[in-house]
Image (cartoon, rainbow, N blue to C red):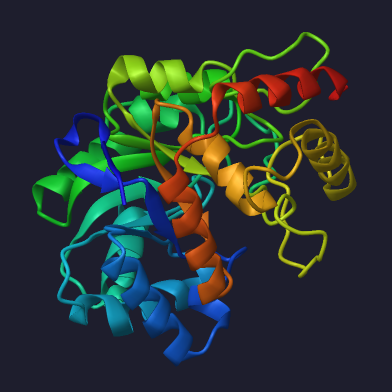
Amino acid sequence: MKYRAFGKTGIQVSEIVFGCGYVGGLMIHQDEDTRQATIEMALEQGINWFDTAASYGKGASEKNLGRILPHMPQRHHLSTKFSVEPSRPESLESQIRRSLEASLSRLQMDSVELFQLHNPLLRRVGKTSDTGFQGLQPKDILKTNGVLDILNRLKEEGFFRWIGMTALGDADACIEVIRSSGFDSAQVYYNLLNPSAGMALPESWTGHPFDGLFKACSDADTAVMNIRVFAAGVIPTDVRHGREIVITNDSSIPEEERRVNRVFKAIGNVYGTRAQTALRFSLAHETIACVVVGLAEIEHLQEALEAESQGGLPEEALSEVSKAYASFS
């Protein structure tokens, strides 16, 4: 396992982060023995970060992690996420504190390394989001006694070491918040089907624009945690399990499938399985600190570890993929 600098925190994080989310679902849908074996394998192979959220399985992911992870002898890092609803009468501070305390209770821990905002960031009031969470505006984060001030107070109380965000929604709103330098990490959407956060694309390319996010993170020394590397399972396989959730505007599962076919027609299958090729695509970008890999079964971890050992895609493969984007219209 190779390691990369995690922004301005001073720590090194494994290139693969064990994703404990709903789409992969291993920490929610698998049996206890499989969860235990997969976590043990991850730690033995050098994975040192686990990422979950209060919303994953309505707390089941955190609860299942809490049964296993605190008892593992290997040193590791853990992050979780929270969301807020500004329209509720309960204050933001009360919502955040209550979510944090509930997460720590489920995880059976007194603190976590990284506590992350899960809400998408939107530029306009009333604009809807496809993520399932109420959108926030930058001012909700950056104003006096806004989300960032509250998080800094909780950080001073020792509940977590670093503050993170989820860079979904409107790219310009996310960039404004990243430029505040108040966040240590950002989870950023980037994959073979939509690499707009970190790659210049042809004018004919269409898709949800995340332009400028990698540069903003680099300028602010904010660690990039790459999410949705498999596009909710659409890239690795043609089999659908019902947990595929498109979280970008102006897209759909059929459109994502068409783009998968175009990419692999251009690149072929010489760089591993489709999942391995997608992971190696992300690992080729030097701005990415780590890739959050969702897993459904232990074999998926073995597949990811093999891909990581081979390194990022070579330049000739990246060139072929880039040419394919001209047909994304």
